Length: 263
Image (cartoon, rainbow, N blue to C red; front, top):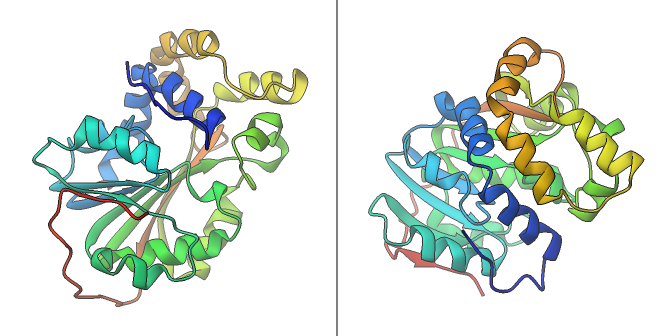
């Protein structure tokens, strides 16, 4: 079991990541929802403790992982630092003003940027998407997963430090406004909606219980079938794939260290 030794900076986030680390069926399901769009040199933003990173390695020519939380980066180093296909482990914050200067070695380097459950945590989501774009090469794509539907915003979102939830329209406007062309979009995990609403809106809980998640994880085979029918209509999350539509290639050479963390 993956354990985060220091959760002082983000107790709720750390507990949630540890709980989902055990939900292997759910993690595989999420990965399979995006894997067709993941290829080449991949950068995962907001890797957490690597719950999805281990699956992305199946599709990557090379994988670079990152998180803004230095404690999560330490877990990533322990979990993935030995893997020859992992090119680097970085502490990356999409919201910093001096993004280009701070992360110059990463600019224009990647074929795919994967940001799952990331941009809803950033107040200026436009800047976050803009900075993701700077990390892509000339023909790069971004794979985004965000929480869906603002009417579902509740105590769970607040405790997880979400600023907002999205619809296809609002996320599409955000991406196209920052110079992306939408390739495809779909909702994900409609069976999760009742549990999220009951826990966070009706009961006002602040964290997803491990027992609740364990039961949900056991039912994933059934939920996957339902999701195939409903992915165009609704879901607890929204997935969108977009391609960079402007040539802004930066030839900066990356450092070749396996681990680089920003203090």
